[in-house]
Image (cartoon, rainbow, N blue to C red; front, side, top):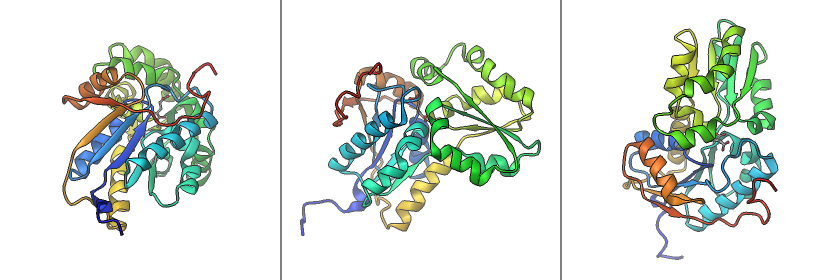
Length: 280
Ligand code: DGL
């Protein structure tokens, strides 16, 4: 037995996204589980994930998980709907020893509570292509009309304009207007970047539409899984920030979103060869 290795409970939780979007999840985990140490990895070199193929995003997720396991971490939170759609199922099969918590579009509560029988979902194009989305709609939303709305370029805009997002109303309007015209009464945010602009979205859709942000539920799930495994941290609360692209640019955006001074380091997971260029 190796007496040098720290007990599992004291290890950090690895959290990743393509960029700042997963900070919406990180923020909630910190709020609910303040004793946990966290490692947040922003794959800004490969941002955005949304327009890429699911196979490509799976390659990134697998490499980041491998990188996390080397650190090591006690759990991986896939704080990205696109990466969850592309890889959650396969990651659980590939790495059975480590627990994963991922994003699933929160169509279930929306469908359950809808009075108009119409709910909207905002996500990246890739998320809508995944079988995870299809199965969620199939399992939980047979009785309602689910209207899917991709928002190309929105994650990049959020990344570049945090935390004030000037002009976001004009960007969101063409996507939200048809959903409102169709009569939705629930709007599911199924991209972690979009949770960062929840208030702006709520303002635009008005009080008659409930905007569903899954971040608190995801953080609760993290706590439940750790508690079940007896792996809740006894003490801690530090966050290490890593970025695969320029660390200073990520640190500036993350600091503005979290309202604290963020220092980020460079990280280089072993990404599959040939997958790093957006045009490839
Ligand atoms: N934050 C991500 C998601 O939840 C991905 C955004 C992007 O990189 O396109 O889907």
